[in-house]
Length: 247
Ligand code: PML
Ligand code: MG
Image (cartoon, rainbow, N blue to C red; front, side):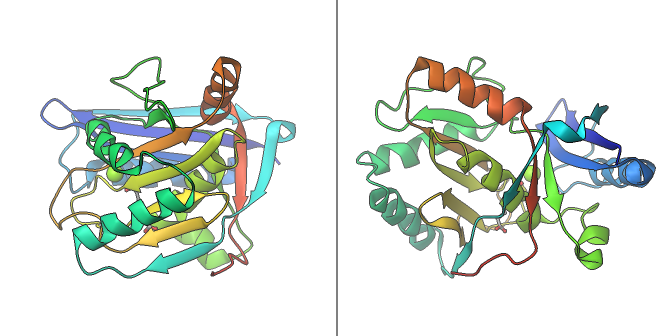
């Protein structure tokens, strides 16, 4: 099967980054997805873009690795502070001694297109370009389910985030990922790790807030860091989302 990667990003002068998306789809679906992603860029709750970039590249099937999706747990929280407490508890369960300090770095990711890559112990930021951050790319979901397939051109926060988190935390040097959506009308966020899977937290920010971003928590040496950045930005990954386990 001939597959193509599509990357969409949209921005404007006032807001900066507005929207971004990743797909890796069969050639027959290329036209349909380009128009869906364009639609998504034009109708985003963060604002009207004055710049839209659609990048399309052929993908060699042999380069793709296939991963099962992380198991999913949902924690219902009725306030932002309770949601943040859940994240803190998981950071501690992962033996991350500087959990509060890690949480306080999160806000530095809010205006970035990519994520912060943070040394989990020294709390040093490791991205070569700190304004842009590290963007995990070249990934999509793999599913036999026709309904999921046809829905995935529009934005499905959960499916897309589960795919991204599965790719990210599968790297041996990533300890965990933290995410709050930057979409003003979406308040569910998560902490993902190999140990605890994908833990959704239903309130991680106030409704209406455009502040969101990601931290990838890393543990390793300089060589591991180079491998990790290359994996996050270049490795092609398809994530099976059928039979997602609920914890
Ligand atoms: C985003 O806006 O890209 C992040 C979405 C987080 C999804 C959290 C969830 O619903 O599980
Ligand atoms: Mg967004």
